[in-house]
Length: 295
Length: 288
Picture 1 (cartoon, helix red, strand yellow):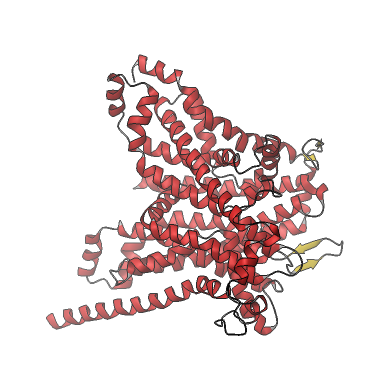
Picture 2 (cartoon, rainbow over the protein chains, first blue to last red):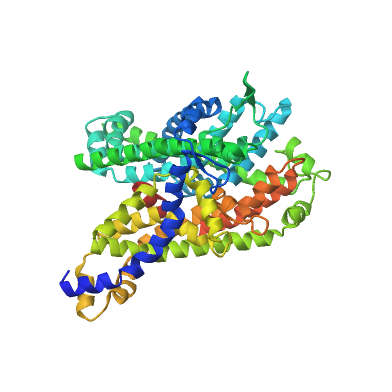
C-alpha cells in the first residue's frame, strides 16, 4: 500500500471501525468488565455494589447445587459427545456410499437444527410426557428420565449438524486412496479404519470440541425440557439441589430466582463458567492449529 | 475370478439397498416429532397428554380452537410476536453484515495496533458464554434504552460481532489486494473501493454469515427475554415460554398450536435456502 492510500484509509477509519466498536463496547466489553468487577461484590442492583473480595467465589465452590450441576453437566457433555459423534459419523459414512436418496436423507436429518432450543424442549416434553403418562409418571419426576430425555433431544438436534461436517470431511478423502486399498484386498471395515478415519481426523477434532462446548453451554433445551417442577434433593441445611439443572441454568436461577441477594454469587459462578468454557475453546483452537501444521 | 468379482458387485448393490431402507425408516422416525406437533395442535387440551400419539377423533378434535386461543394468549396478539421476531432478525443480521464486513476489511488491510486489538477482542468474545454477561448486559441495555425491538439490533451487533468479523477477515485475507490498488489508481477512495469493489466479492461469506445470524437471532430466547421490555414486546420463543412455562394449568393444546406456527416459517426458510444453509453452517463450524 502506498503512502497516499494509507493516509486516505486512516482518514476513513472512524467510519469503518466506529459502528462495530461502539456496539461492541456496549454489547460485550463493558458488560464483561462490569461482570468481572461485580463477581467481587455483594449487590442487588448494579448501583449498590459493595466490594467483598473473593467471598463469592468461595461460596460458589461451597454451593452444593453448583457443584452438582458441574458434575451433571460434565457427564451430560461427555455422554452426548460420544453418542452424537458415533451416530453422526455412521450416518455421514453411509450417506457418502453413493446410496439412493442420500440428498433427501441429508435434508431430513439436518432439519431439527433450525428449530430453536425452547421450541425443541417443548416438543420433546410433549412426546416424553405422552409416553410416560401411561405409567403415571412424567419427565419432571425422575432424574434418569430428565437426563436421557435431554440426551435424546440433543441427538435429534445435533446429529444432522455434525453429519454435515463429517460429510464434508469424507468427501475430501481422495477416491483413489480408497480404491487402492480395495485393490490391495482390504475389506470394507479395514478400509474404514485404516484409510478413511485417519483422513477425517480434522473433522473429528472439530466435531468433538463443538459437541463438548455445546453440551457445556446448553441452556434453552434444559430450561424447556427440565425446568419447572424439577426433581430435587433437600439438604440437611435446607438448601435444595435440583438434580437435572445444568450449569447455565443453575447460574440463571441463582440470578433470577427468589433470592435476589445472591446475585454476587451468581456472577462469580458465571465467571467460573466462563473460564471453563473459554478453556475448552482455546484448547480447541490450539488443537486444530497443531493439526493444520502437521498436514 | 470373474465370478467372484460379480458376486462382490451384487453384494455391494444389496448392501446399498439395505442401507437405504434402514435410513428411510430412521428418516420417518426423525420427522415424527414434528408430525405429532402438527397432529396434536388440532386436539383438545386434555387429550394432548393422554393420547399424544393417536390421531384426533370426533371426541378429541378441536378444530382451530387451539390456534385461536394460542394467538390471543394473555391478551397479547401473536402477530405482534411474529412481527417483532421478523424485524429483530432481519435488522440484526443486516447490521451485522454491513458493519462487520466494513470493519473486517479495514482490519485486514490496515493492520494497525488498534485493528489488531479490535480483532483479538472479537476472537476472544467468541469463547465467552452468554451467562457471563447476561445480567450486566441487560442492565446496560436498560440504561441506554436499548430495550425495544427497534434498538435491540445494536445489542446483537455488539454481542454477535465476534464470529462475523472473524469469518469476514479470514475471507478478505484471501482476496488479492491488486484489485483494490487498481481501483485506487482509478481514483476510488476507501469508501467507494469498499462498496463498489470489495463488497460484491464478499458475497459467499455474506450469505454464510447471514444464514448463521438469522438462525441465531430468530431462535434466541434468553437475550431478548432479558433485554426487551416484556410488558410491551415479546418474540415468538418468549411467547411460547410464557404460555408453557407459566404457573397454574398449562394449555397444552394452545402451546402445541403456537409451536407449530413457530416451526412453519423455519421449515419453509430451510426448504428454500437449503443449499446455502448447509454451506453456511459448515463454514461457520470449521472456523468457530
